[in-house]
Length: 453
Image 1 (cartoon, rainbow, N blue to C red):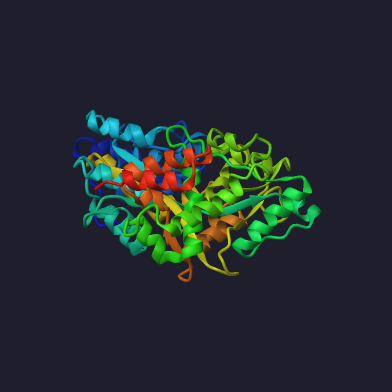
Image 2 (image 1 turned 90 degrees about the horizontal axis):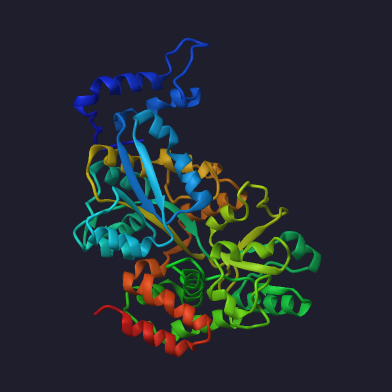
């Protein structure tokens, strides 16, 4: 792990820092008692954190969208860092992050660090002048561990603000292998085969799809993932890029075609919403709960990203494997073996340049943190220093390899790249209206008219 500079230990606590670091190195005689809460493994690992410095009771606040079990794993991922540096990393997760981060910034009460789930929202906040350019150490890690495309997602008007954190490959279709084997259903290799399989499953008496757009104030984003997948697969990366950059209008016929193809699946009352209700329930069903009927055979398929592996159970009791309780395939393209995927990720921006804040921000941009978090399960990262073997299932290992494969056509989640007013606003709400009965042309026209001039 490289750092552009060593993070200095504040002079006022140098003695305490030295004692703390000595305690972490693990020089105690065998059988000697350890400090309360410490572990031998953590003690031996503290040499890896020496460059970050040590701090006596410093606290760094982190604000993001990560909740529940994923938040627990996030806290666990930096526990050793906290013990070795003396920094208390206080994480606050919120389902209303997209709205509340603006409120907190405007109110002069931003967190030390924010985990942005959308580059478009990051750019909006950077435009207020409140977000700080990334420190040298963070920029150095980003240069070493991420591709230029990923670095660009954290760059606004030529200034690098935020290194990537976690990542996801979107467009997975989750299913129950035993149910499929029992019925003789085979994984489709083209989008046309997806349509054919959907009809076949419906004829068998099983509901093909279970879908949920609910996500608190962010309700609607799961629908945008569907549309983005179909735009990329039907019309290719050039059209996708033009759409995201507003070089073609939001209501372009190619975009309308993608929306209607999705609608053929999830607005058909014969095809949804297995184990939940009718089409109208899509708008209100929480995305985290929406796929669970797959486990009971109440629906056959659920469209959601690689990170959904962490939602199947709180205790890892659900086996994710080809012959396990649940498995997934990547939504195919118009032709077999098409290698185009969408994906997402988070970016860590800072509102403070205090030394302890820089230390945490730098750690989160490192390969050490990426391997720590991924090894805890449920997520992946596009960090090139990540060992795919640390991913918690064969599916996530495959997702890491997909991100690291130069032959993959990868495009970041389109709504996350659009201006926040659209990507985290009218696109979300428009799809809620659409799945609730509004027609495609009306919804796309309204989103087009909302695009900032």
